[in-house]
Image 1 (tube, rainbow, N blue to C red):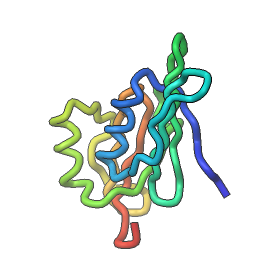
Image 2: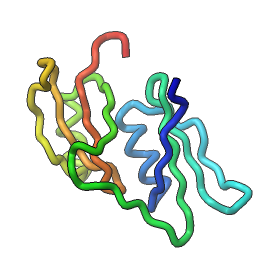
Image 3: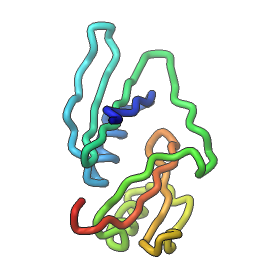
Length: 122
C-alpha cells in the first residue's frame, strides 16, 4: 500500500492552502530537526508530503502525463473558484475517458494536478 508521495516546494504555506482548498486535511506543518519545513496533507486514504528546503527548488515536469490525480466533489463549482483565486488551468472542464467531469490545474509549484469529479464515497 502506498503511504505517501513526497515533493519539494518553494512555499509550504501556499501548497498546503492549495491542497486544503481541494479537500485535503493538513496533518503536519512543522520544522524538522534539520531545519526544513515539512507538511503532510491527507487526501482520502493517501497523503502528499512536502518539504521546503533552503536552497532547493521543485522542478515539476510541465507535461500533463506527469501529474497528481485527485477526486473532488463539485468540480463544476470548484473550478471557477480556483480560477478566481489565480490558479492556472491547463485543461479546462471536459469529460474524462470514463465520462466524469475532469480538469487539470497547476499547484503553486507548477505541478500538474488532475481534478476528477468523485462519487458519493469520497
